[in-house]
Length: 334
Image (cartoon, rainbow, N blue to C red):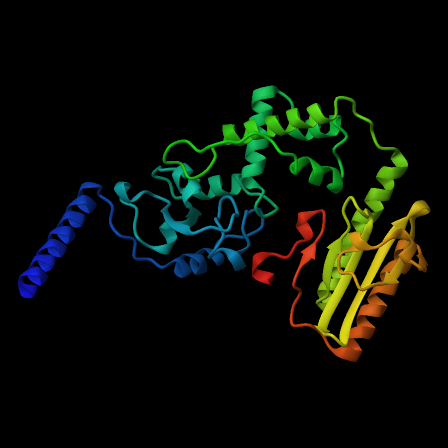
């Protein structure tokens, strides 16, 4: 009985193998044997990464067209059905979404022209930018101008805007992602929700905007210093805006938490704290008067260097929570 069952399984496996081979021949699609690492190695020597959506150091895991981290597919430059060869010179690496959009023409140059024309300077922004282009096509007005008209101009404003709760969307059948019109529709829904919550726009004063810019630049410097000494970063939100805490915990006897806040008149003050979240600090806690931004930066660098020299450095940063996500830890740095 067992022998008959095993024999039947072998027969079914053989039938399945033959069926797959017939399907492969019917689709005229041969299995690509060239390895992804060889494709990266080949093009690294021939194509300058300047102007691409991906750095060559991450070309094995990020799509060469959109720059998003995703499982990559080997895409023929000249299609297999048009005689394109299975070799590094005829292959690029794209995510499944971009692979569908990729050109299928008998040209050795157009693929790279297409990839470069789609280049973006910042990772994970490609599809957002495409949605904004679609929005402008539909309404004849740029999405950026829509934000400016509503006085949504700072990192803090944008964070509140993107956190608005709006209606839902769905994917078309068999599509694992939103199309560009759906993403553009979500932008319109978000603007409508903002208008509903803010029927009258009360624009912030010029002095307030200058203070925001001052602190945004300060956060940039704080993140640079914190990265140097592997300190974690947490920027204050609505409960305590214009504040930031940097912290390091090696053990219960080796810890350091410093919070700095920008007060009226662009005066910086600091305090040593037990809180890693600056939102839990109060204005009266900031008892160390630092003065200018330059003085605050020098103070922070001195204190972090002092702590590191005395207790050593953590192996790596654990988190960087800032209003502007551009400063956040990347996946490969966590």
